[in-house]
Length: 104
Image (cartoon, one colour):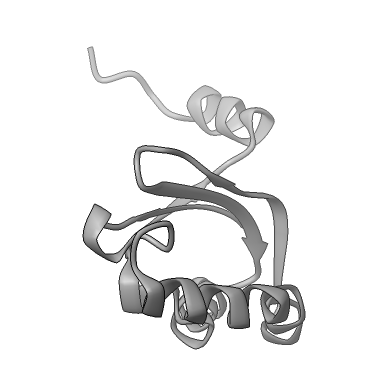
């Protein structure tokens, strides 16, 4: 299953302005690909960062629990609020729409 991770933080804890957060990010970022692999999470796209203090990651995993462990063990949840959106590919979404009976 695919998951869209939306991680947001305030300007006060942004790695561009907060020395402690920057130190943690610079230490942990190189470890994240290996951690993801160990937990069974495939990073499909990203991380993409923005000046809106939001990071977007597209991930793939068999279970949502693996994504949750990645968020926790990577430390992302320590300075971000992370939304996890289970998602389908367009093809899978179209199949699902086609299988549902309209209600209106």
